Each structure stands twice: as structure tokens, then as C-alpha cells.
Length: 390
Ligand code: F3S
Image (cartoon, rainbow, N blue to C red):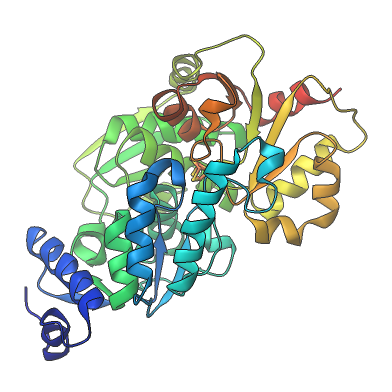
């Protein structure tokens, strides 16, 4: 990989050991991907923030790194394993909380914004079209590439952090225009409702694997993009999709090699496949990916005037910033459950609190059994809200 003189100096250790190690990692990854060089980025989204996923060795590594590591571009952080303020209320134990706060302090020391969300694009990290970024968190990656038109590969925790420190990333994969063309057209043969988008993404992701799909016949709103993209990234390895609402828009793309259709019956089969329980869940969860302002408004509107059913524990997962922007909505929602800021049903140690979880998210339904040992009650958002209220 070609390096500039400045990059060579960093690699030679002239700017300190931490920057040398970060550069070494980027160069190794760039060489593997046959990148010609590094490209400057405007932002990073750093993952590896929950104590559940990084454990004690990860905490020590971050503390050591934070002694002299500083990020050089706007950098935001993925969800933690708990609500940094209301962790007791979620049932998190002291020991976990102490380790989690050490992680938070380490990232803070490095200059990373403690946004603690998988929706950085709602809280001020919203790059423009064609800007290069280095984001970890698969749901945010697919949103950035597909909806914002920014350019990122799906970074791992270490590579996103190294990119944040250096301010550059290897120029390869989805950073390059010619690699961003769709190869497979997916025709949606029905008009999806909001609740269909997540399961539609699951079905498409399973069918296309790593290829970039061109999804035709739909015109999603932003929250629907959030749902479909997260699901595609979870069931397949999709980091980007394109979409076209009609044949005319479709004709701009001349790289399609195959076409297939998705019908409503496939969604019903997939729903049954993701559902592993029909009994009462321990926790009803909403907000995977984290809720937007418009979703908060809709949920509060739906619940307004209804009575809570006290036999259900509910988590509304949302970034702290969005929750703070919605005081009226959170006041309504708090009557029905907990506003779980900074965290989510998958990265919190939910396996210590529950054995079955209800969700309307295909991504959560994929990961809850495998990463959290949970049975899953997979239902529409409206059904979940009807479960917790009367
Ligand atoms: Fe976000 Fe957690 Fe879902 S990180 S995308 S709410 S699994």
C-alpha cells in the first residue's frame, strides 16, 4: 500500500507508540484488502463499548490505550451494556456497572463523544453523500451507505478506533465508487406496512448474502430504512443496498446480474421461523435499532389514554439525546416501562435478568437466542404495545 511521508513517519513511531500501533493496524488491513492507500475520513463510529462484549481484558486494553490515545476526527460510540444513569432500575449489578463506567471513562479520555447509540446519524454524526467514514455497527453502516450515501466498510471495533485515532481508513471496498453498484435486483411484490420492513430486510439479507441488492417496488421512509437495513445486515452480510420505486429509477443501474421477487408469504414464513416462544415474555423490548424522534412520538401517541398492564416489564431502547428531546413522550412511555438509554436488549446482560424477550426487530430476534440465550416472541410493534397496555 502506498503511504505518504506523513503516514510513513507515524508508522515509524515518530508520533508516539499509540499512533504507530493504530497505523500498523490500518496498513495491515489495507494490505489484506489490496487498498492503494489510505483515505481521510470525516467521522468514526466506535464499537466495543459494552462490558458484556469486551470483558475484563478489553477494559484493561482501553485504559492502557487511553493514557495517550486521542481521536482526531468526530467520533461517536456504540451502546453500552447499561443505562449509565438508570442502571440499577434495569437490574444491572454493581460489579458490571463499575466495569462499564471504566470503559466509558476510557473512551471519554480519548475524546470520543459518549453518544452510546447505534443510531449516530440521529445524534449529530450524520455525514454527507460521498464523504468517507469508518463506522463499526452493522446497522449504522448500512444506513450510512444506503440512505446517506456516505462511504464506509463494516469496520470492527479495533479498526474503527484506529481510524478515529489516525483520521484515515484504507481506501478499499465500499469506499470506492465501482464497488457500490448493485448486482441483484429484489422485486417486492406487495405494499409493505411499517411492521413489514424489518422482516422484509431479514428475508432479503438471507437471500443476497454479501451482494448489494437493488430493492425495487418500495419507497421507504427513514425509520423504515433503519429497520430494513439493520435486518439485512443481521441475516446476511449486507453493508449497502440501493432502492428504486419504479422501473424508470431502476434503469439507472446496469450492473444487475440476477433478479428475484419477495412475496408476502415469505415474510409470514420468516416471522414463524424467528418466533421461538408463544408464552408470556419476561421483558418486552422496543428500539432495535434505537428509536427515532418520530418513533417515540408514534409510540407515545399509541399509548396515550391507555392503562399499563403491570405484569409486563418493558424496555424502550433509545439514545439519551433523543430521549432528552422527547420529554412529553418519555413521560407517557414511563408509565408503561423503562426508558433504557445508552443500551439495548442485546448488548445489556439480559441473560441475567430474563429467559424470554419480545421484540419487533428481526435483528434483535436473530441475536437474542445466539448471544443472549433468550427465547423470542416476535411480534409487530402494535401487538407489543397492545401487550403492555389495555
Ligand atoms: Fe442497536 Fe442493539 Fe439493535 S446495538 S441495532 S439496538 S442490537
